[in-house]
Length: 254
Ligand SMILES: Nc1ncnc2c1ncn2[C@@H]1O[C@H](COP(=O)(O)OP(=O)(O)OP(=O)(O)O)[C@@H](O)[C@H]1O
Ligand SMILES: [Mg+2]
Image (cartoon, rainbow, N blue to C red):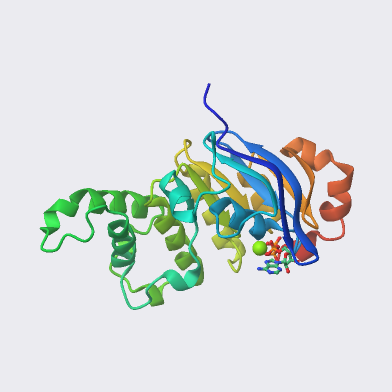
C-alpha cells in the first residue's frame, strides 16, 4: 500500500517561551486536498516552515512519502517532491511571464551549468512551461512584463513556478490573500483543476475558499490542533463554530 504523503507526529516548535506549534499530529493521504485554517498566529506558517525544513522542530517527527525527513535539509526534501509557493518578490518584474517561468524551469535542470547548450535541448522545458501557463490561462499573456500584471495574476504565476518543479506535495500559504472576490473565485477554480495526483496543503484565511477547495480541514489555535476531519465534521464541530463560523468569520476574510 502507498504510504501517506505526509505525517506529522507530535510536531512541536518553541520560540523561546512561546509554543508556536504544540504537539500536532496529522496525516495526509496521496492526492488529498487539505486546508489548514486558524486565526493569526495560530502556527500555520510555522508548520509549513517545519515541513520544508526551514525551521527545526523542538520535538516530533515529519515523514514525507513514507520517509522520516525530520533531519533532512530543505533541498533534499524538495528533491523528494515538495514545493512551496514563492513570495511575490521572487518574480522578476522587468522580465516577461514566459521568461520568469522558463528561468525557474531551467534552474531545476541538472545540466544548468553546461554552457553553449543549444536552445533546442530545452524543448521539454518550453513544453512544460506552455502546459502550465495554459492551465492558468496565462499563455496569451506570456510576453507581458510581470510588472504589468495585476496582483492576482502575479500570485497565479507564483503557483506556476511551484508547479514547474512537478511536485508531489504542493504547499500554498494563503495564495488568495489580497485578491478580490472575483479573482479568488477564479483562482479556486484553477486550483480545483490541478492534476489530481498532486497532494495539496493549503493555508487559507478565507473560509469559503477552504471549504470550496478542500475535502479535509485542520483547525489550529494557539499552535494546537483543535480538530481535523472532513468538511461536514468541521462544520458540525462546536469548537470550530465558536472560533470561526460565528463571530470571527469576517475577521478571517481580510
Ligand atoms: N521566527 C520566529 N521567531 C519567533 N516567533 C515566531 C517566529 N515565527 C513565528 N513566530 C510566532 O509563532 C506564532 C505562530 O506564527 P505563524 O506565523 O506560524 O502563525 P500563522 O498561523 O501563520 O499566522 P498568520 O495567519 O498571521 O499568517 C506567532 O505567535 C508568531 O509570532
Ligand atoms: Mg502565516
